[in-house]
Image 1 (tube, helix red, strand yellow):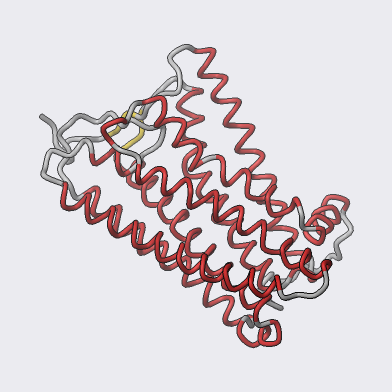
Image 2 (cartoon, helix red, strand yellow):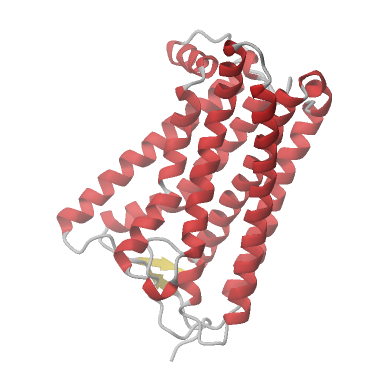
Length: 318
């Protein structure tokens, strides 16, 4: 019987046993990671460089891209390195850091998506008060609150998880350090703590979900009152990308948390892990730029080098 004080490393679940499949996994994840870096990086630089994008919507999108880059960079490089070097090991400190950072980024992203729904509500339902309610200082405060709330949430969950004694080995049934998998290694009666984590997470997600739903009910009611079809189309175009990202994020989170541990098996867990941790950061830039002509124009100017030399802060005119 081992405990957490004697565990110096964890063994992550490998995607494949054969060398050919390990290399395939490495190149596949490398492609996804580079796509995420390129997409989110272009959005970050475009918003920072183009003065026309210094608005609250793009300021929050700037922060969302930073969070997406952080979340995928926390998980994918280590998984790629393990496949490339044919190892499964991650240190105890590395595992704890991975849990904390991933929770920090995805929790902050949930809060930020909630803030972004408020931004869309004010822009469509209260356009005359938009500059007052969402000035530069208000935008910075709301973004800072999302990052701060994510930090506190991650700190609470990480401290709670790694304070438990672990005596069920050190093999984690996931390709990255995940709290439910680590709790399976606990030798104490951790059901109350686990229930507390689930209840807290569920309340958090449900509260954000309710706020987003109420915001969009008001948004759709206002959009349907717009007399011109062109006006309705423009309003829907600004909302649909955010709604798509929120739906993807919350559906993955709900599925992961409601999945019964009694039907857990390695292959589905690996697939679910990839779907909710790797795919969204790579897909979000595509979702936001697909119907946004202004953003696509800014990215194209960035690629072709048409920006002026002076670079301004993305929050300066929010």
